Every structure is written in structure tokens, then in C-alpha cells.
Amino acid sequence: MTSVATMPTSESDPVRRQSTPRRFVMCRPDHFGVSYSINPWMDPARPVDRSLALSQWEALRVAFERHGHRIEVVPGVPGLPDMVFAANSGVVIGGRAMSARFTHPERAAEGPAYHEWFARRGFRELVAATEVNEGEGDFLRVGRRILAATGFRSSPAAHREVERYFGRPVVSLELVDPRFYHLDTALMVLDEDNIAYFPEAFSADSRDILAALYPDAVLADDDDAMVLGLNGVSDGFNVFIAARAHGLGEALRAQGYNPVGIDMSELLKAGGGVKCCTLELH
Ligand code: ARG
Picture 1 (tube, rainbow, N blue to C red):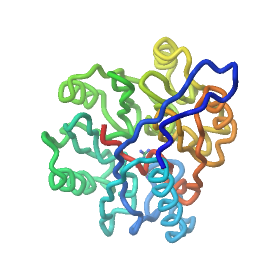
Picture 2: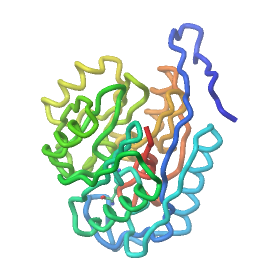
Picture 3: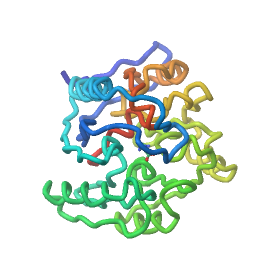
Picture 4: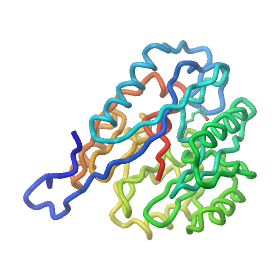
């Protein structure tokens, strides 16, 4: 069932949103756990229910498929508990792929593991990032441009490397709150020219840039941000977000989008959500 035809939310709503089928890469959380802490959400002393994480992940995959999206699954690697967060594997746009290079030694081996998968998958052009680059965690394509973050993970040099390789303008943004350590924890792409974001996660200069580029953006509040509500995936109409991001869901509906709530509570213990588990092949 592909929901290509969309409905305006009210008679007065002039915007008709359109979903387009997507291709996503996901990695089964067979080896998921919280055995170290590299962001403020992670507490190794707090138990993780891996089978619950698996069923939440499976529910996300089913939700994507039900809405007409195609999923490719990468096998997880024992000893790499964060590999489930496929968004960090790299950036893929128009058959060109760049695999990630991680900040922390705990995740370093994921770079080559994902690189090998990309190579087997047969991308026309594939390189490994030479700068610290956490993939779609920090690089989000919005229409022609790429929004990129620095502050906690990916480096400013990585922004330039991505710009050169993909031949698209990269807009650099600075994250300032350690709870929102990746761009995709504070900003979500809704369609080719609109986004949702949590302004407080960004420096004053970056907020100005975002306000100028996206005057119609959906702004999230503290409650939405604290359940990683912005860590969502949109197909242009359906927006897959944390089920607990109620305010954000309403704000999206008011702008003609269709929020689809997904419970990712177990993956949130590692600081991840819907988008973290999803790499888009653009
Ligand atoms: N524990 C992981 C880390 O801190 C979570 C990564 C979430 N991924 C994302 N795209 N935000 O690196």
C-alpha cells in the first residue's frame, strides 16, 4: 500500500503534501547494547532489553514497508553495539557513496564494516571519508543542499570533503548541547525545502542561518526534543517519529504532514531513534 495520494488536513490548508517511495538501509540490532558511554543518553549501568529493541526496530521496518518504502538490511557485527544506527554509516546521493569515519574508538570498526557492505552493494563510486564524518547523523540532504553539523562529532573539514565529493553546497551548522550531539537529533528533513528543528540545540549564528533558509520550518520544543522527536524520517507526507513526541506530531499535522508514531524507547537508551536507525539511499 503506497500512500502516494495525500489529503489536505483541513479545507483551509492550501498545502498538499506528497509522499515519494524511498530506499532505506537498516541494521538489525542483534548485537545492540549499552556497554560504554559516548553521549549523555548512554548509561551502561542501566539494563537494556535487546529483544524489546529488536521488536521496536522490526516495527519501524514494517511501518516503512507498509508505506511503500524499500528496506535493505545490513547484518550487525558482534562487539559493535551501536551498529544498529545505520544513519551513521555514511552518505549516499545519486549512486555516490562515502562511508563514515567515527569520532570514538568504540565505533571505529563500524566504518570499514559499512564500507565493505557498500562495496558489495556495488555503488558506482565509493570512498571512505578521510575526515571525521558520522554520515547522515551529521549530514542531511535538503533539496540541492546538504546541512551539516559540527560541535561534537563530524569535523568542519569533513563538511568541505563532503561538499567536494558530492558537488553540492554544504551549509555548516554548530551544535552546542551535548544531548543533541548529531544533527539528526535536533533537525529533521521534511521534504525538498522544509525542515523541523529544535533551535536551542544550535549556536546563535546557526539559528540565524536556519531561520533565514527555512522561514516555514516546524519548531520543536523541549518536550519533543527530549524524546528525540526530531530524530525522524519523512517521505514528504508521512513522518515517522517517536510516538511520544506529541507536540511535534500536532505541529506536523497542522502543516499537512502525517505523523506516524513509533516507539523506540529501548534504542533511546543509546541515544538513538527512528532516523538514527535509517540511512536513506538518495
Ligand atoms: N550511541 C550512538 C552514538 O552515540 C548513537 C548514535 C545515534 N545515531 C544518530 N544518527 N544520531 O554514537
